[in-house]
Image (tube, rainbow, N blue to C red; front, top):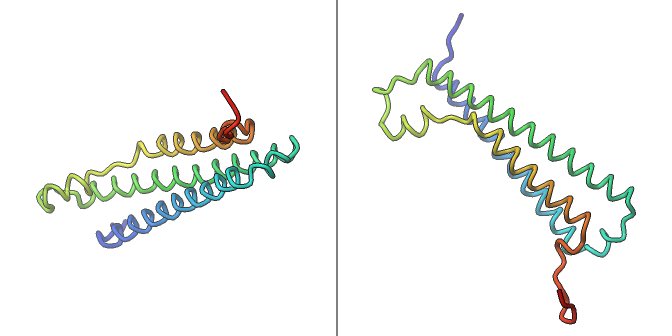
Length: 145
């Protein structure tokens, strides 16, 4: 069985980190667009019938699931790569103490829970905005609580 070269493993880890960055950027970009749609075109969204709202919310939910699953899997792959790096090349005497602490000992095992929290929170906000326009609408000057 051939063993990984250290540079090959580090390069693969950086590639997965790049994929994670892309997935987060995609998530943020989509949600900026969604929030802009809900805030700027609220009258058009309000005019949607229940079926159209259902399909819109379903589409957002599917996006949240696909993007969240891809992020969670990428984090788990990165964590496995970190573990492989520690096992193969992680001798403490080879690294500066801070680098050893922040890179060699890095763990991403808890990141899928963070992804679940952020993606489900974003979905709840979108659901609330579709369900009740008062959730995102400010009061006009003549209205009282």
